Length: 139
Image (cartoon, rainbow, N blue to C red; front, side, top):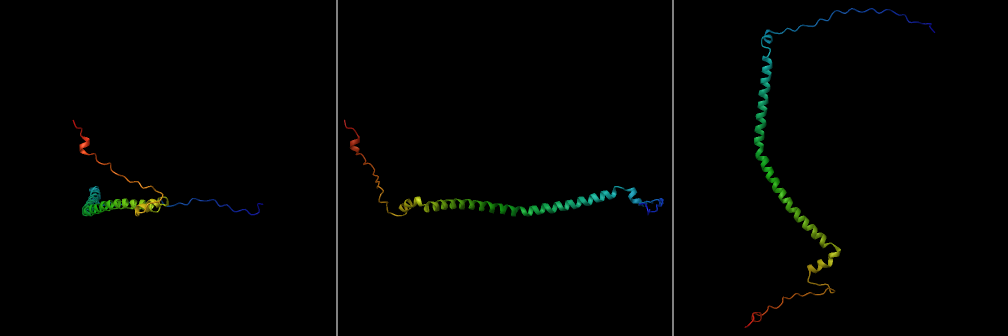
């Protein structure tokens, strides 16, 4: 089983040259004023944000009258919708009443002068007014 054996060579550590980190050459300006660049960046950010705020505010001011007009139109339309819904409900109830088979005779009597022959006629009369002489007692 050990007919072929691989040859083992000892590993030697490879020497690499030491890493040299490049040094940064900083200018004398950055050393003397380290916060000047930070202050300039902050100032630019502040200026840009102010310009954006002014633009947004002016856009809102210009859109306000349009918004008010749209709100008024919306209120008018909602009032019309409420009126129309009332008319639709009334029409729907009339429709259901007119096409209800159990109420067909009643609706026909309301729409015409005919009366059901099996229905008794009820005639209401006012009682005669009492005479003025009879109502007052005489001495």
